[in-house]
Image (cartoon, rainbow, N blue to C red; front, top):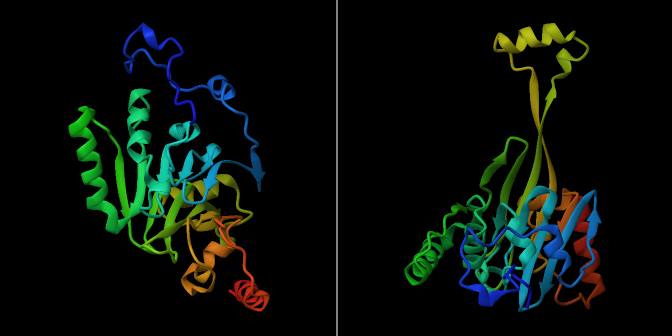
Length: 259
């Protein structure tokens, strides 16, 4: 069980939000050291044990995909994306929100499949009634294909995955404004005047950076609506069973390349 930041001198009295400091890198260091991957320039952390716990973290972007049992490192991530309602992926959700409140961190933004909205709201209402805490958060239900702006240079889109219960993955896009070809080479003052006069001088360019599937069968690869998933710089896929039919595997890979 991971250390959730409890005081070592527990006998000193009950903990309050004013007495417990937020977790720090030093406190993480007291936990069991885990290897950190760096993929395409992004540090990647987390845990994935089939049927027990899944949580994948991109700390430099403050993103966590699924929450498992709420590992300590996930608490400092501002955005959380839930793929489906199996407990090994969503079980730690109340603890995640409660601990951020305990550390007086800003309410997190939580993305869920749209059909889970009422169930998740009831879950938080139940915990509020039991411990009388506020559990402040921003809940964003997303339909398949729906987009949401995380910040000016980052957005997310939900995509269809194929699991035993309704599920979805998420693509994170980097959003940039690039000067239109017609205005390349113009002096800066002329570009500024054009912009002030209301001329649209840039094009919006979106690049899929990270895609997360959660639990899914390989069918998501062949779904034509998921082309951006396969174009992402990083694709996070949970693998519980390797393919045994290499002919089928080859056809899947070929189809993926052709998308």
